[in-house]
Amino acid sequence: MAESHSNGVETRTDIVTLTQTILSQQQQHKESTGDLTILLSSLASACKWISNVVRKAELLKVLGMTGTTNVQAENVQKLDILSNEIMINMLRGSGKTAILVSEENEEAIFIDSKLGKYCVVFDPLDGSSNIDCGVSIGTIFGIYKVNKIGNPSLADLLRPGREMVAAGYCMYGSSTVLVLTTGKEVNGYTLDPNIGEFVLTHSNIKLGPKKIYSCNEGYANTFDPAVKGYIDSLKFPSPGFQGKFTPYAARYVGSMVADVHRTLLYGGVFLYPGGKLRLLYEGFPMSMLVEAAGGKASTGRQRILDLIPDDIHARSGIFLGTASEVDEIERRYRELDASNQA
Ligand code: AHM
Ligand code: MG
Image (tube, rainbow, N blue to C red; front, side, top):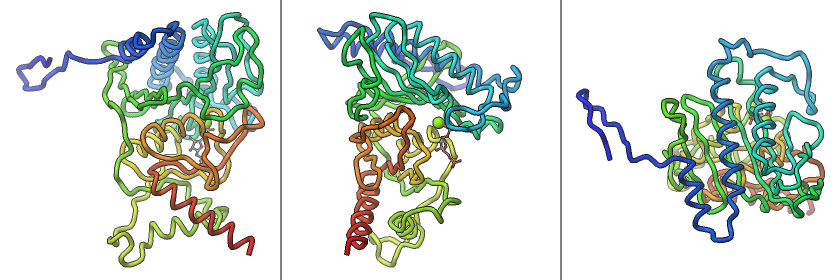
């Protein structure tokens, strides 16, 4: 239902909220205990809180470095730390978690609870290099079920990404958007700051048709010939290539959340071949989302979600996006491997 205003602007009042969606999904499963619903609701609250802090960062004087480095030897921003504390406290407070893994903590955090049945892996504020200039940044998360309630262990985390039960991200951009999948479909919810609710705005997201490539091409000298050749084919399409001469557009924000969000909505391919990105809380959640939206995610030689990390902060090269693009990258890797063996 839409309410009409004198200025001609219509306000929709028949909204669907994130809370309604996860509650109704829970009711569809007779055996459901509601634990995942409570956990997702705590995650959404954490994202609202982080969004609020990000928007007020300049005023709250939480921009800039802490002067320390994290487990990855990267400079730590004050907002990274604040966001991490918000995530840890909200997830612990949900009462439904057993283990947490954060980009900011060297060790996994074991929650002192006999009831927690979920492991949550997260990057509290991804895209740190963009914080101080107000460019989009975000929180990325993945959720697993522990193998044995009451007895969580590292083995619950060092398992293939395909075993995640849910994954998503929240992007703090021109608006705050939470994108979530529990495997079947991908939905996006925009935070309405007036009512404090995530409202369904992107239903059943499927990768768009646009021809876009997204990577830090400044590192091109480190790329494998397969990747260099692929990128060249996008920039200098040979006459008749797919019946067109139009080169692909290049777009690169430098925040994975923003680059993957655009890839999901518009289509194209996001590449970070160098192995900087972390599997548990960057590669796996984004791969689950992209696959659920009809795309693919690969190392170039293997499906990302089939990898088994040997460490909670393990890294991997990643190519994700439109299936035909990822297929073409894999084809070029097969060709490269065959010529290396010959
Ligand atoms: P971070 O977790 O320290 O923020 O690093 C991850 C970010 C990703 O968001 C982004 O895709 C990538 O690093 C950008 O790296 P680069 O600056 O090398 O292009
Ligand atoms: Mg990150």
